[in-house]
Amino acid sequence: MHLGPLIHQKSYEKIEYLLRRHPITFVPKLFLSAILLLVPVIVVQLGITLFPTILQNQSLYVSGAVLGTMYYLTIILLFYGFFIDYYLDIWVVTNDRILDMEQRGIFARTVTEFDINEVQDVTTEINGFIATLFHYGNLRVTTSSSNAGIVFYQIPDPNTIRSRIIALADEDRKYHAALPSVPKN
Amino acid sequence: MLTIPLSALLIIFGIFLLIFVVFFFLNFRDVITSHAIDLSTMTVTLIVVLASVWVFGAGIAATSDVDWRTPLLSINLSSFGFNNSL
Image 1 (cartoon, rainbow over the protein chains, first blue to last red):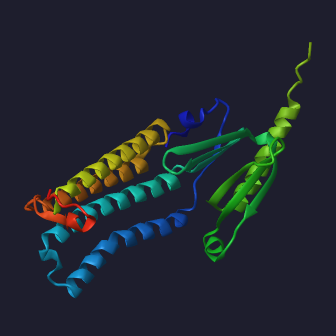
Image 2 (tube, rainbow over the protein chains, first blue to last red; image 1 turned 180 degrees about the horizontal axis):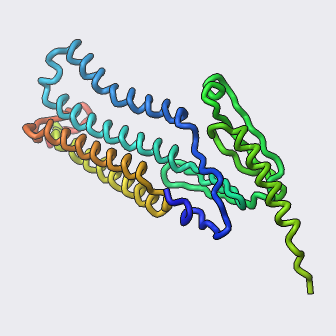
Image 3 (cartoon, rainbow over the protein chains, first blue to last red; image 1 turned 45 degrees about the vertical axis):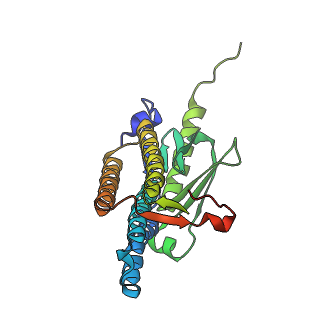
């Protein structure tokens, strides 16, 4: 992915992290899609076993074929929606900014961005057995200008990233403090 | 007696396909215009398109020998108080 044009990268800006949810969080959705794909096969096998002449009825056969096709196309689209939602939820940390690009459903996207020197609190949450096992969790960043802040959901290794964000924020604050102040007229 | 032929299913299928295609291409356009498209997105999109075409083709093949005039549903209108046969 070419991140530069996507985030309008500045000349002095260095991308520190490009983060997505941990891949393990996509597995349940993949598993659900696979189960849903298998449902018609099981239903048809069960139907043939219980009612061996069921497919000889032309109306039932055609209805089954048309509805089955619609069902499979829907599941394929559902899977694509899951993938888009997983893959296009991106958090970018640079030495100057933090960007949160969240895909909400299929047609809605929210992009939030703030300067890294505005970072006030960085909190990590690792909840549950699976999250502890695979080292992923939420990272909440609040800023001095807004109480809402942004949340990085289910990102890998949140504690390392928290330390790095705090270090980057300190460096950026020092840089801004060292800049000569612009005299007011 | 009102008889609805199997071809009525094709109308439902046609409406579904229209929604599917519009939904898919709007989604795809949204991904492209976000500049977030890369090899992974393209690969998954290609797999989704191929799978959709294959499923659609399989549906067509499964119903190629069907007589679409066969009744899907017969409704006895006299039970609703109508006397004229349609």
